[in-house]
Amino acid sequence: EVQLLESGGGLVQPGGSLRLSCAASGFTISTYGMSWVRQAPGKGLEWVSAISDRGGRTYYVDSVKGRFTISRDISNNTLYLQMDGLRVEDTAVYYCAREKTWSDVVYWLDPWGQGTRVTVSS
Amino acid sequence: SYELTQPLSVSVALGQTARITCAGNNFRSKSVHWYQQKSGQAPVLVIYRDSDRASGIPERFSGSNSGNTATLTLSGAQDGDEADYYCQVWDKNSDWVFGGGTRLTVL
Figure 1 (cartoon, each protein chain N blue to C red):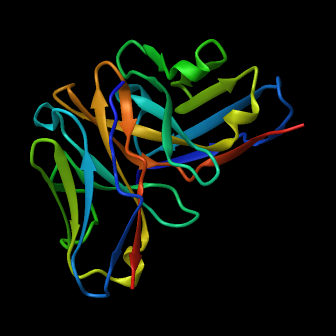
Figure 2 (figure 1 turned 90 degrees about the vertical axis):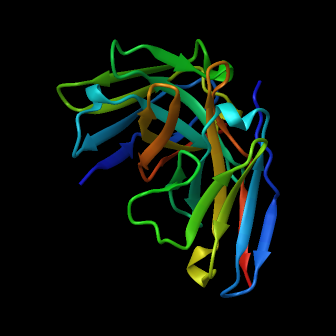
């Protein structure tokens, strides 16, 4: 069974750092692109970052560029999101998700992890 | 940047048909995907590539794409279908784009 399990969330002060982890099982993360998507309290879904399957190219939404770093450990089959310089507006539940594609022009996300909550507050 | 527009809420009587729309530009060149998110839970893929049902999704769920509007149709709505529904496309300039979400209420 394909599963994703996030961890690493918590309460942090503005300017602080957190590292989120997403442990994958049932598939090998190096053969799929992977994404992080967040959801602020009472708000909709916002894509945050992605890492490609081949070559591990990374992509970020403008609001986190230079502050967040996505990476993966293939030996542990785990995806990470290093979050530095955290701001109050980064408060959200963070989900990791596996990317699915058709002909490299159509992309969707399946499955999603259960999410980990990040709260940035003084 | 590319944008998707959904109605904030849709209501449907128990057992009737609900339709949730997602509007965007030039949908003919894109595929639309739909996710269901029940309260306190993670999103779950419902429909991908406009009209393909994800694994384990009942046949009551269907999708269509007619150019500038994609529609998620739920036939025979049940109490357990109450959730937020999000559409999504991938755009080469905007990457991953989600609609604002639609709250489905079953009356």
